[in-house]
Length: 305
Image (cartoon, rainbow, N blue to C red; front, side):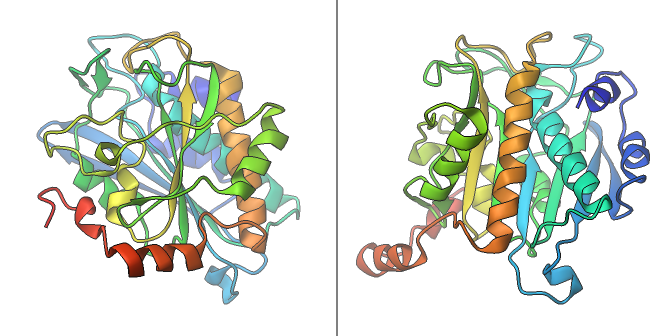
């Protein structure tokens, strides 16, 4: 993780350097350089093939891990790695661990697809109680690159320090979100949380507003659950949190222990999810909810129709 952190904490951080680091262990990595009138970024997609993964004709489910962020830095306005970059660092740390495991013959059952982006020069944007990091690309464009139809469930890792409701240092898990429904927290993921952290589970409270698209005029705690609006598969957030409200554009705020915990949680979830030993939601209960209360998929649309 320290090597990754050093590579990302540079004004010229880029996806090709990350690809070079990974290629010793994993050749299945793709870098896309995107540019528009607002700036540029490198999207990095890393696939880890499982023993029984769909990429090799198997039947095990595929897990998606998304490192959510606006940017790694806000240069030239601000020097250094910003708090918002923790999601990318955690996702890439998990990808490197899974790649190393596969390289030495310690394959997990299902495929895992990890996606994040590398932007050391992202803009900032106003937000209450502290400023957010912005992005050169809107949420709809980012979801297009971060979400794959191959994913059967998604973990979204995002720095979630700019608030006054998650008041602890570490990692919090969200309830599962699927097709506009906020479902119960997965018991299997809570078990993994306790095992990995040695602590009682911390659950991030989320609202209906948080699972609607950005740009619809309502308050969002952050973008942690924006992937859920672009897919029908169950999605959870792993929120990297702090006791005090810290701006996404704040530097020197990365707690490596918390980032490492988020990465380790992701790896352990990937192990058991591929085996079919945990699920993100109760499929029968979800069907019952839909039968009794109808579809809530309109919440995935900006206009609600």
